[in-house]
Length: 269
Image (tube, rainbow, N blue to C red; front, side, top):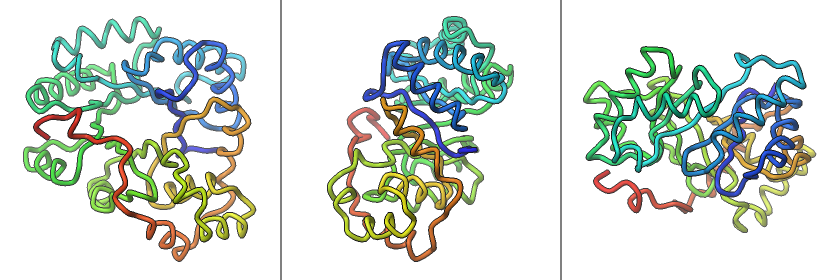
C-alpha cells in the first residue's frame, strides 16, 4: 500500500475525464489512494468524478480515499469562504474533503480565511486544514499566534531540501507534503552519477529513488503523471528503503533551487 504517495492533478496533469480515469484507475489499483487538486488546476469536479467511477469499479470505499483541495487567492480576496466551499462540495458530489489548504496565502486576508477553515473543520465539512508555500519564519510567527496547520505543502525536492521546514513539521506533528518532488527531473537530478548508482543498487529508476527519499525523510510526495505505467512504477516503493548515507548523498544536492517563487503570489509573506 503506497500510503505516502499523493497523486496530484496540477497544471501538467490530465484535464479530461477519460485521461483522469486512466491515471486514477492505475493509482487506485496499485494502492495510491490520496489525490490533490485546487480551483486553479481546473480539475476539482472532473477529478472527483474520475475517482468515484474508478473506486466503484475496484470496490474501494470513499472513506478509504483521501481527497484534498485548496482555497486560491481569488477566493481569499472575494471572502465568503464557507459559502464558496459548500457550493464546491456540492459540485464535486462530496459530503466532505479530507483536507483543505490555503494555496497561496495572502496576508491581508489570511486570518478571515483561516477562521473560515477552522469553522468548516469543526462542522466536519473538512477533516484537516493546512497551508501551502510558507517558510519556517512564517510558521514560527503563526505558531506564536497559536496557529498550527495540520498540513504544510511546499515545493521540496533534492535541489531544495527545506530542512528547517521539515524539522518544524516533525517537531509539531504537521503532515509535510512535497509538491514538484522530482523538480521536473532537472538535469542535476536526472544526470547525477551518484543518484544513478543508488538507483542501480536498488534496481530502480532515479524517479523512484527520489520519491523514496521524500518518504524516508518523513514527507508525502505529491506527484503528477499522465502515464498509467509511470504511476505503477512510482507505486512500487514499499519494498525497499534508503540507507542514511544514501539519504545524505541525495540531500547534499541542495542548492536552494526553486521552480516557483512564493513572493510573486504571496505579497506580504
